[in-house]
Image 1 (cartoon, rainbow, N blue to C red):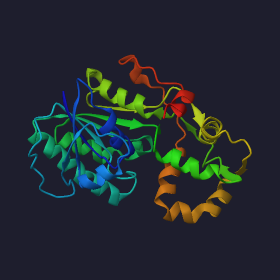
Image 2: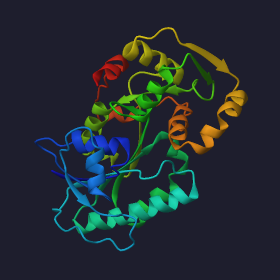
Image 3: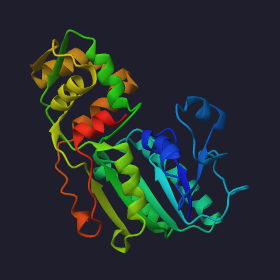
Image 4: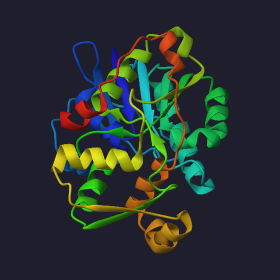
Amino acid sequence: MDILISGLNNYVGRRCASLMADEDFRLFAITRNRKLFEERMSEPIHAQIFEIDLLKEDIVDGKGLPYIDASFYFAQVPALDDMVNVRVELLCLRNFIRLMKYLKCNRLIYVARLMDRRSLQPIIELLKELQIDYTVVLKNIVVGKDCLLYNIYRQMSVRKVVFYSKQYGGGLLQPIGIHDFVRWLKAILQVPNFHYNVLEVGGGDTISAVDLYRLYLNLKTKLNVQRMISLPNWLFGLLYQRDIKENTGTTEFLQPVQVNKIIDNSWGAYLPFTFMPLKDILMAE
């Protein structure tokens, strides 16, 4: 099966370039700047990379790419709750679908974050307008080597005191290991019931963001001397309002940890799947 992916700046998309290919999946990927992408990769790339800019209006040239059986599109923007972001996303997605059709492909898995579920309507409308056989996946937080969460946790772990609040730390998460998530994405392609559907997916263990950090400290750093202090939401927001507004990394970290929803993984009625225990995920890479 020949697979095309887009969204290599997205953590999952980047890791897919290394992890998704196997004896049954021949992987092709597109990026705006191939050289820059390859320089940033810290692991072997198991995909053929093509340089295509989805921000250009009239993209039709798939020169060098074969006909494609299915495609994965990882959301190109940080979030879909901003109109500027939505316009950029719709332009890129429209151009990607144009490329898909040029490559005789009509099967698309669109992957966004769980927090985007309230802002999906423009995406769904575009998929229907272009008559694409789609599945939309809304994922809980995905973790693994070099993910944003681990990078932030490493920075936090050197502090003597860490502050959190109910809004920024008390919410429940269902982390998914990157290897599990890639395996799951490949598996859903074969399930007829998932066509023209929105799937929400979370890992097997439920944990608060602050407890996930404590578990990370215990397993990864063996540090137990750090103080963690709970603050009222308003005080936490006041102390860190500049970081929240101006620091892209901080914003990308804090947005998903505010999502407080338990996913029942009801898709399991059609696809039996077992996620790794959270401790194993944290120790895997």
